[in-house]
Length: 398
Ligand code: NAD
Ligand code: USQ
Image (cartoon, rainbow, N blue to C red; front, side, top):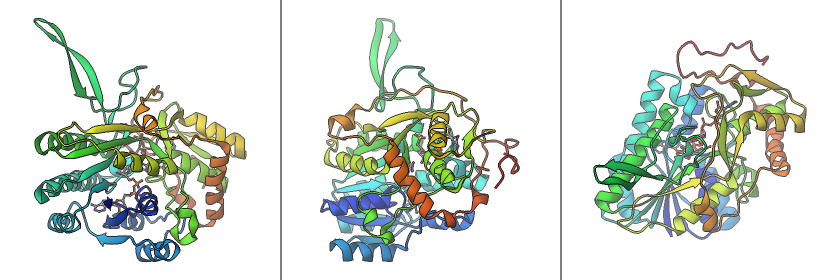
């Protein structure tokens, strides 16, 4: 297949591009490198030394003979170039990772809120409008988030894969209707993903676009079989308070002997998936697209669920590093259950990678190897959901 990977320089997009290239697909990465620019703004870098795109692609070609093309393009700002690129490439599929993806970053300032909405919603709409404008039959696979459902809305009822059957009372009795699961975003970032869902529903209905929306949990780990081939192919590893996600942060904190930063009670239950499974899920979604005229195909891209405190305690036990229970900078329930339907990928052949000591060790080894690159002043999460929730810098010695 000819595939455009939008956001292919990022944490999920880079290993996915290599995996799909390894499978023999013809890959074009489209990225405006905004994630690297945000690192400059936040004065922090990936814990792992990621290489410039040109070098990454040169090394991949040297090692495998496979060529990946790169187009530097802003999905939100450069509509005409995007449409021309789709028309000229005539891809069979587009994988869309190209959004601002950190919830804390999206809440840190008014400017960051506006940027996140402008970038994500305009970018996604531009992709949809451009596919329609070219008249090509392109399957779109988008990375959504488990956070569109919210946490705890339905109590112990399992979260379905996208759609909910509800009973609508009528004068002649109840009728069953299938609706998109109610959206309940917990941050401006998550809100943009709920808006994306409506854009997809409209374009699937109006234009017959073939769209899969993958509601992914928190991705952990760093390396895949392709990114380990050469240090210059290494994937990014975010550990800072805005972009670092919880399990990778704990692994990195353990590697440098920093107390594990649990927000609040740690009773938050979240869904997780290893980066190796992310790339496999995308391959499966590409191989099983919906037909024109079908509703958006929603998958819950999740392999397991854990409470934050349970993860911290497990890593603390493995490494001897203490757990610090910090005031929660976010507005979220102190505790929630999370029961997620995740049959679709399993039925299509996903063999889930479960969190295990071996894999935790592998990620911790990456963190240990590069720990001298860590800036410990960037670890505590300082972006808050509302004014007055700021965490005192003295709470954890840095
Ligand atoms: P990332 O920030 O590492 O990568 C996103 C990439 O998109 C970056 O390379 C960035 O430069 C690019 N990008 C952003 N805006 C763009 C634009 N306007 N034009 C062109 N390129 C643009 O994020 P990630 O962790 O790889 O996440 C990828 C996708 O997966 C996101 O949409 C995210 O919401 C989703 N997701 C991520 C996780 C996770 O734990 N990392 C979990 C669930 C869902
Ligand atoms: N948390 C801590 N300590 C930390 C960091 C986080 O206790 O040091 C807590 C947070 O308060 C939150 C939970 O851990 O309750 C998850 O936080 P996170 O930063 O790991 O994940 P989140 O903000 O939800 O966002 C990440 C990705 C996002 C993706 C989402 C999937 O950045 O792109 O959409 O995971 S999900 O969470 O399933 O919606």
